[in-house]
Length: 516
Image (cartoon, rainbow, N blue to C red; front, side, top):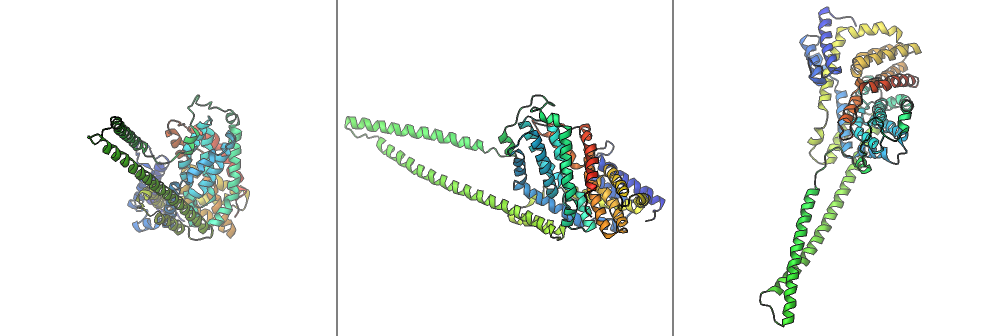
């Protein structure tokens, strides 16, 4: 593609630069409007500067990607309601055999859950579990938080629904879910093992000491608190129970007093062989009779409550089973090669219907800001592509980045790694994806598929390089910092010390295992 006019190149580069700054540094002091507003600003500038026409801007929005992203988010919300992630948290603590066993479990569970429920979702719901278990066993949280974030990123590389850039790659390349999975799965599995071994090597001494040497004495978290962790506040129903118990006790005391008084009068009357004329005996009979009737009513009411409670439990279990079956059906449909966007949307709507309730509370949890961010990003990246700068850059690098030899794969991996950390991974995929695939297709059809998978693998693992490399890293950092009273601050440098060697080693080993 030839370079556009100088005017279009300049204004298009300015619009993209504004988008890039706000995407990488959403709280930049001179314009702290965030990533979503930043992407819309970049898109608007592309249209105002006439880099794109309004119709071209609308056409740049990739609806299949948005549909797939929306569907997977809704399914994840219903899985959380069905306690899927609570069970994953229990699995972390179940018969744990020490710190090293716990770290390996976190790596495995984080990777698997991220592959099917996105890395961001897994980090959101598992971070507090990991912190609580670490505090409960009096262990330093640092290695476990690194294990959670890094394994979530590596695990998400295995499927098209694991992270946003894989969604883009799967839709643009038209690689089926099954081929995508089995093409990257060997690299993902070995990458998780290597990542866990690196963590064990770097923190072996720290994990061998059964106390938190980083923060001194920390109040331990009871095991029941770890297991009973939930993601929505519980109601204080025990207050009403206490009030009812108090009223019941007072009524019992008053009733017992009346009965005793009536029985005393009855005994006195028998001793004096006189029938009391104040109605005390009649009062006693009424009280005893009333108490008997009330007792029967209470017993019947308790029995009714138990039946209702049992019925609700069974309804809840049946609903959970339906959620899991729909999710499994969605995954099977994806493996069969059905349209990914409509499969995810169909599964989401099936869960909405099965819930048989107003779907608004669940749909309000969908990250619409992320969907809007994608819309703005599609337009901004398309405008930047029209300037001709990405094409010129790729023409410069293409002779050295052929994937038919090891040196070319290494150069391509370095380019993707650097751009993913400078421009973020999704824009990198949008900018390079079509060009890398076209270059590989000139070699052979099999090479095209391999090029897409290499792009997916490197752009995903690149997120582990630094704390700012991915949203999953930032989610773990922020969730851990805000979790009171057992919060922990994961610093940028402590992450970088592990992130750099892990990213480079895992990327290189994985590249040798990508199956085209």
